Image 1 (cartoon, one colour):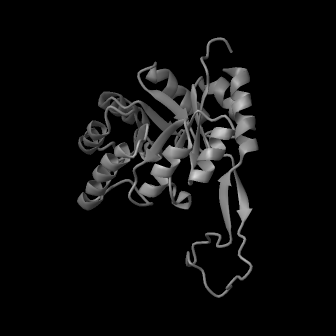
Image 2 (tube, helix red, strand yellow):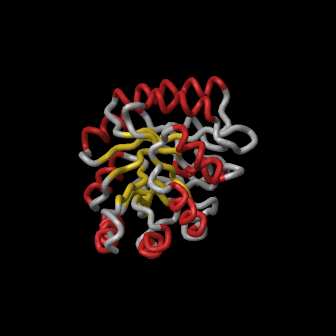
Length: 253
């Protein structure tokens, strides 16, 4: 489509290994997280530092002190501010966060503090946006804050299901902020999402399951309690899936 510039592919990763695989697959940027089963939390400083050493593509880091909602205590907010400062010092290229009030509106005061701390790095408001009570007002609030982009599934579990709202948000944004669809974006639906939303950046995972090399399994004990988190497998970025996604993006962008 000649009306679109190059499509940017950001890969959500939870390890240095996966970040390296994303780069090998042709990704433009990674969002580095920990605890993806909780939707992503701030990774360790060692992970941020080693990832910066191992990849040359963009490195955005999520600043989220815990899973669950996006209404943070004073102590949690203090952690977030310190994490922003340290993450910048470790060489991150961008900061990703989201803070809401109890009524589902964007916490403008605290968000402004984080944005100011993060500068001159670009700042992304993550899928806390999908938990806002009024997405159109939230969009204007983020624009007023000077945010660079917002990650959204269109307030649905998967971006393909929220495609109409995403398209509306991108139209209303009118270049004032980047609308980046994410959640369930893959090689099967990317082309449709590009065509219908006219978005220029996409957030993908493209993971595969890798079995543990442990021989002995103690089946009586679960480190994750009853949460259903697999004990003897892990998810890593699949180079082949990312390469296929970037190839599709390249043929359309």
